[in-house]
Length: 258
Length: 310
Image (cartoon, rainbow over all chains, first blue to last red; front, side, top):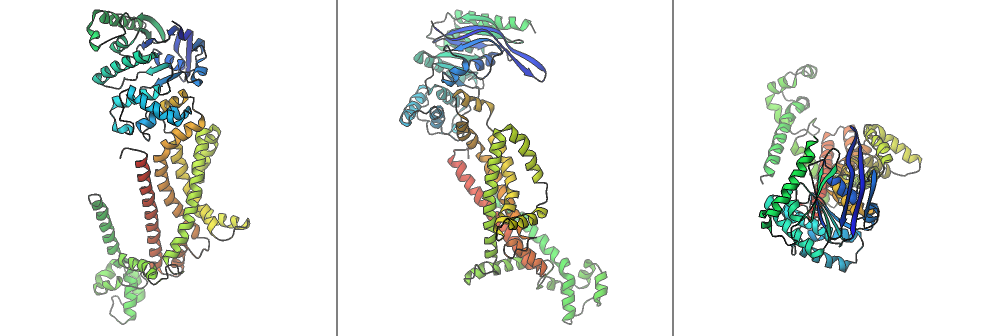
């Protein structure tokens, strides 16, 4: 398996009014092509910060980080990844189709191809037929699906997701988890997924990275033995419960330091 | 209709208060005229009446109160008299084909409207350009904004004559240009403040999103900041156009202008014809109302076309 993302001894210290805050401390991790890696931990553990470093939205203050063999900033400029934020953040003045078209317009895709890609990606997230609706006409779950479509539209190989389902209720979240998994299997993308839900992390991931705060660091990396085909009721299986247990132990160990 | 009721209720209350105020405001003039016409008034002497309060005059001369409501040159005209004067100087003249005679308020309103629209265009352009500079440049943010605020603390009445004198010094003929400048001076500020707020309204995550697309500054302006600022823009435009009209009228007051609603107000004052002042005032108010309503309609249409939740 080739490494898509390589972090070595990554450090990031924010200068705040209350003095320096160490958001990431000595984070080393390799993410291979086609992996689904979740980052889980309490708030302040640096999971979002790490994702933002990969995206080139934060500048690490130490260590090395490459994405597709480039610096994160070069990868960002090469449009190596699609990013999904916790809030769908659709433009209210654009239709769903218009929102998905936004990155395509910015990246200068030809018009005919834009239309084709919008149609195809909306189908992928099960929103065919909603192209001409405005965001306010859609439920929160549908809006988040549209924002995933927006991140997929230009076919980057990497998908970075920052608690994309954090604001949704559990039933919608289960449904979207299933869909995301199916989508990942179909597209073979490399996914970095930030969450603070243990079942969500275990259900989705091939690897779970447990992090803990002050300073933000990796405390455990768990390879999931679960098959890639995962129905929702896999969550009642023994393996699932064992992994969830190990994640919980990892999280608790991180908290001893408090 | 449910929205009209409170508006009408306030209107009726205002008109009632206005009618009630007419009697005390006009009773002295009414009694003077009645006395000259030979009627009996108490007290009889003009000088003695001057010492007595209007309330006692009203109580002692109730038979002359109706006269207070139909004076030719009342201190305070009734709403009906103002409406009559307004009609006489607008609709009636238009019906006689003299809509743009110098005695017509349509003519003077048109003069004021022209300067207002030029001032509005100039002020809006300056306000938007200033806002863009402030949002995109830290230097402009720190240097421009304080001056913009200070500019609004200078009384425009003090500034207006200077603008007129200076513009005639540099060879600008007529009142049109300086009036538009004075009008723009009042109008740019709300647009500037509103647009700064509007252009800064996108959430950090929305700006981050564009960064992940490696969007250029130009793209993030036209695709995110500008559309996001539209609701703020319209709110400021509505304040701005009203300010532009006030600016134009102020520009017409102390400057020896002979046409425009402001000039009508001043001339009415100088010739002691309050009816003309009131008619011009109401013409200005109606003009402002029409302009704001027009912007409101444009706003509704624009926002609906932009898909904003109705």
